[in-house]
Length: 222
Image (cartoon, rainbow, N blue to C red):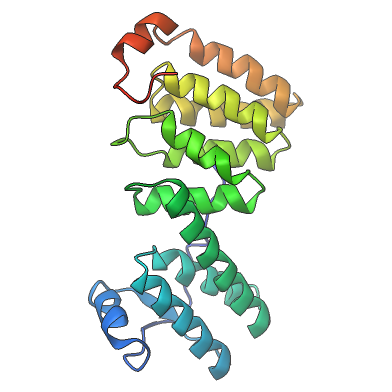
């Protein structure tokens, strides 16, 4: 089971204030985008402005809303909520740029999560390059994030995941890898050892390197 990216519970919701960046916020409000009412008025205004700027830049603002909600649920100070939302906005923008040209919201959020656990920025580009441009990389990024968070060196995790991707592994294959590694670690195996064993198992189900290279769209071959 993958780590949840954002707390799903929202205690109190409201539409984004039309007084803050009206055009961008109205567009979000028309989609039903909620914002938790933060008790401190100054913090609430700052967070709303941050969300408005993110909306103007085309970032997935629901991730920022969820981050603010998480801070309120955890009774964080207004300053900590502000910093958390601002930091996430920067990561979302960085992830979007690294996963260009046309990442989905799920890709961008997964990329921001990867950056948050210490995955080096260039690795997001490597993950993107390992799949056809029309395929989402959210699941490979989620698994990379999970492995790094569990102590697997980022370079080791990236090597195993990109090898699988280039051999034609599907999102289901990669999700299964992450779940199996998690189970093995819970049973006492080290994360590195679990990854190596499970990656070999998935690899045995995939086409040979020559067959995978022949089937891969141009620009995705190793």
